Picture 1 (cartoon, rainbow, N blue to C red):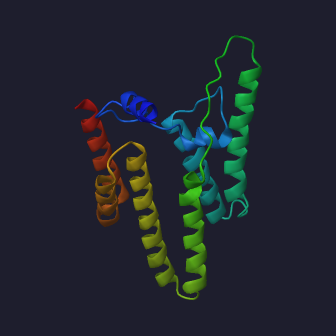
Picture 2: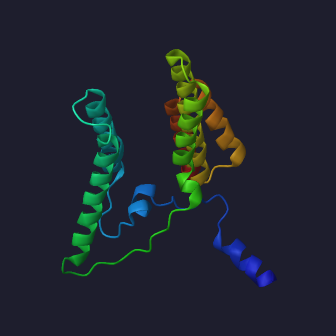
Length: 187
């Protein structure tokens, strides 16, 4: 029993942060050969979703476009990954971390908030907008907390950044958290 704990303590060096986890987009689509980087993932998810929402709000497309375009984008990326795997040549297949249930929590919470708002704030548009803004702010704060926790910061520091995100905006909390992560890695 002491051998196991000794080997675990020897494997983890003090002050070293764990390697960052693979992005959810890679794990969700189970990509093995195609690895879109950060700006490409943002364009493929938020960009396509935003374009679909604008088209639907402008009555240039149906409301199903908001669901269909991001799914079509994901299908094209997955098809590209499959084709890249069929190409000749030596390719090392990296083990892929499977998505955990907690990875989907922000999405489930977002849908839950929207359903809650639909049930509670039934008739007034102003109350619904204010409640929706608080819901989005809370969700963004939780995402900042999750990001900083997964990068290896202590929980009390992560809560501090989540509170900063809620009070001053998600971008301020995220940037301060990223600066702290970089500072700790350099130290």
